[in-house]
Structures are given as C-alpha cells and as structure tokens.
Image (cartoon, rainbow, N blue to C red; front, side, top):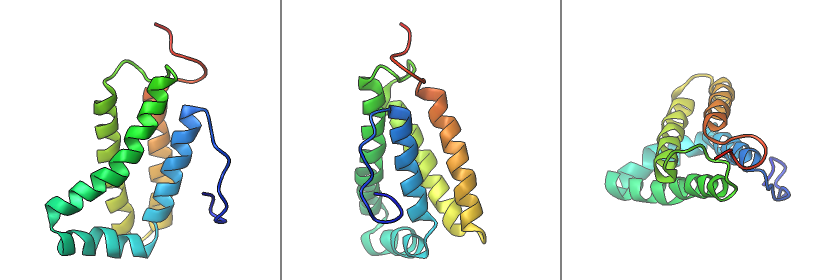
Length: 132
C-alpha cells in the first residue's frame, strides 16, 4: 500500500519489490506507535520468546518472500536463500530499534533506507537472471 492508503500496483522486478517493501516497513518503524506497541510493550506482554516467534513470522516471512522472489527470478547471487533472509531480518530488526530510539527518526529512517538499498543491491542482481 502507498502512503496515501491506496494499494500500489504489483511489482515484478525483485529489486524494486524489495525496495518498496523495506520502505513501507521503515515508514512504520518511524512512527511512535511501532516503538511503543511492538518494541516496548510486545516483549513485556508476550515474553521475549513468543514476541520473537511472532516477529519472525511476520517480518521474517516478508523477508523470506522477497528473497524467494529474487531466487525464483534467477536474480539472487549465489548465497543460500535462508541465510540471506536471516541476514536481512537481523538488519531490519536492528534498524527498526535504531529508528525508534533516536531523537531524529525521520533522518534515521532515510539513512536506513539508503543502507538497505545498498545491501539489497549486493545480493539481488540487476536485470535478467544472473549469469551461471
């Protein structure tokens, strides 16, 4: 969905799809509600283990879906898909915490988006399928 609340048209390009998904996630992270409900209240109310299971189910599932699309398109560099997904899950989790803890969440969100775009560009190739 776009910032206006309208559903964005589907994107076939794995890189662009990943960029859009990360941008949407980081937009949510920049909000006060995410910090308060997900990062502060969630672990306290649910317990660390259950909170982590749910976080992995939702955020981890999103990341794994993006990696799978890149893999299916032949655009993932030769790394195990599960390892790539876990790496991005960890990075996004830490970035969400960083964004919520800073005095300048919008600046941190912008910097995080640029960093994640570079990370995605390092493992998802441009154009068609990667050379064998």
